[in-house]
Length: 147
Image 1 (cartoon, rainbow, N blue to C red):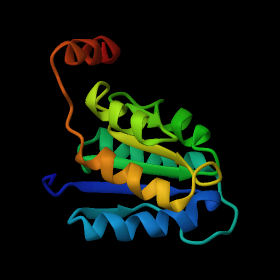
Image 2 (cartoon, helix red, strand yellow):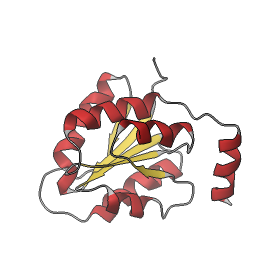
Image 3 (cartoon, one colour):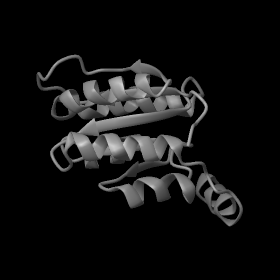
């Protein structure tokens, strides 16, 4: 199942740095354009700074989707969802990754590098990137959120 190449913003804090680097390579191998908003090393940083960078790009239309990674994914999810038009989904397995796209049109995927391993994270990103939004009754519900 192929997907049109998308422009994807990616960001992490120190806890997600190593996984971010691996996911960038995966996205590029899938034919997507990647905009890396940091961080640039495993040195301690504040996750809200990176959530803001990625969420701003996605909300403003500069990128089609985003991926945020921290230790648990919780902080990134909370911070990203503060932005109007952002539907950041914290997922830990394939089913929720797929459903976040299919039913919720999630435009940012949040992952916990200390919760899931790199193998599962890569499979989740593949599924999330390839799953289209179903629309229909789900579109009506998304509109209710954005009111």
